[in-house]
Structure formats: C-alpha cells, structure tokens
Image (cartoon, rainbow, N blue to C red; front, top):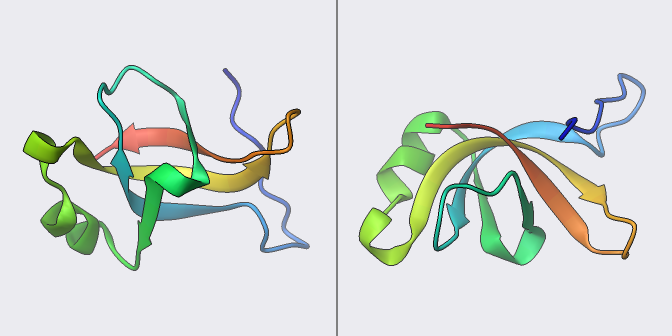
Length: 78
C-alpha cells in the first residue's frame, strides 16, 4: 500500500513518532483514535506496552480516507 505523499507547501501530512493501539502488528494503516503522537522516538518507545497492545512506531499522516476517516500509515515499527 503506498504511503500518502508529504507536501512541502503544507504541514498537514507529516511523519510522527507514535504509539499505536492495535491487537496485531500486521496492519499498515490505523484510525486516528488508535494513534497517540509523541515528540521523539524515545518517548514513544517508553510509552509502549506490548501487553496492552500499545506499540511504538513511526507513522505518516493524518490523511483522509475515502470513507472520510482520518488515518495514519505505518512507516515502520520502532
């Protein structure tokens, strides 16, 4: 699945460090209500808790889906 492209003229779609709530790490996109953004990779890693389904990642977004939801796309797991 292609990632949304960043626009140099806009700050709407950007890369972020985040913790994602998900029962499995096989997905590539996540609704915004499952994503908590952090200032750094270290902060995201410290906030992660795999026992609770919280995983640190680098994401790009938010981007509006065709259904009107705001989504973040996985760049990679931290």
